[in-house]
Amino acid sequence: MPSRLKPALKTASKKSGAYVSVQEQQELNSTYYSEAIRYIDNAKECLKKAKKEGIFYKDKKYVKMACGTAYSGVLVALDGYFILKDVSVPEGKVRKSIDFYRNNLTKLDKKALKTLNSAYDILHLWGYYDGIDDARVVSAGFEHANTIIDKIKPVSLNGSPIAKNPAASKKNAK
Image (cartoon, rainbow, N blue to C red; front, side, top):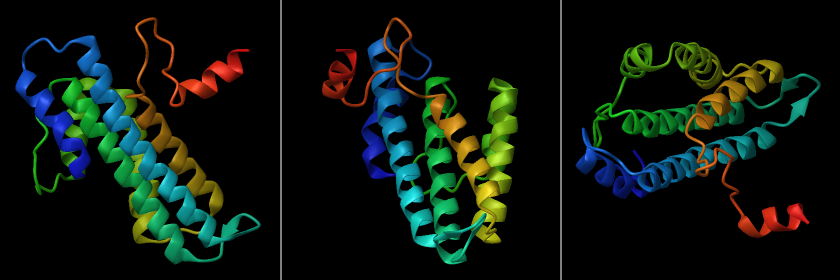
């Protein structure tokens, strides 16, 4: 778990089993969401280096890096999701298996479980391990990753998404 997430985790773990305010939920969502998006953005930069030729990538090394990074973003998002759902997430350098995520999603959200399974197969197995070079398959993996990450997208009290850049949203509103 990235060190920048530890303060949010400590706040949530102190509240485990107790009421967590809406503001604390939003802060936790924002922290984990921002980190997961950072992973996805880094993964997209890696894919640019893979250079697409038609429907295939030319350099598998960068595809592998991109898929591994995107999959890590999925796990960060799921950690945040589990904390919000009061699921105990191991701290420190404890390696969590895919079974940890599958078992917990089975209890919480079966649709998200299907999405995780697809993201795992495409990004982790086919992309990271095998270095699949079909851009359409990699793109589908990124779509699944974004679906999971969007589960923790911060929202305002009225349910609308919170803008990342408030100045930009004011400009668009005019």
